[in-house]
Figure (tube, helix red, strand yellow):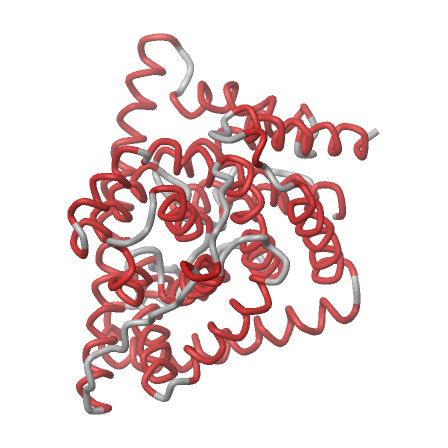
Length: 393
């Protein structure tokens, strides 16, 4: 029965995307079908095979080692504040972002990451039916982040039609930056993080090609990457370290604000109608959670966490998932976890629009106008990824 419900759920997600399409007759279904098949194959390998377990285990072990090294620096500065019997979220989860950001800077400086991004982007362009620029941008977003990625293509931003600009922004919202993957792995299981990273890469193209179909002429599909201004090694290292620290501070501030606001709104809702705000959101999202494989007995709680991610951010939702009093089955935990691994939330609209506007004011205004449609598409990507995991887990 779960397979019947899961397949219906996937069809509903794709149908919703098609209904919102600005060019229903122009949708190219062959690349969509190919990418969905690839999602099933890659998802099954990562979650259900020895090879997948080996790859995920190696990836997780590598990040665990990096987090251990990050801990050396953190302990040196904040060791006196650490409590052996308690975990401080900012110190243990967010501050390692500083070290991971420094490593990304080193790989960028040595031209290793650009080579990887171009290679994977080229392979993606062969199967997604879109341009090379879109493929490059999707991979770069997963490494550099949803705002930094636009700097590397700033020379082309002013030349892009709104259809292509939508796809670039949708990719940035559907993925997550590599600098915070380690933080995710401390909150949810590494296999769910890795699976979501891979499936979202294809899911972003699937949903964007349905909602926003277009053709790219060969003479328009040029990738002109802006090289960073030449810096010495230690200038670059200092800049990336400070960037990582800024990210940690921003995430911490967002968490303080959103957790406090949700607590206040929950209190108001409970006092007025006897039901918390998150419970109300849970009932709204429950049917969608059920369609992607969550048993109805767990659908309201699962829907509440999914909705929390959309109205706040993924960190707040992950904290809710790992909180006390929630007991999900392993399959439900997997579905919710992969749903949470993306930047699909309201705050990302402002982040992406602001990043583009800082480079090209006119295009930034265009992004702001289709901001809600951007969030709509990115949320469908999360549902698509979660629905596939519900079928194969």
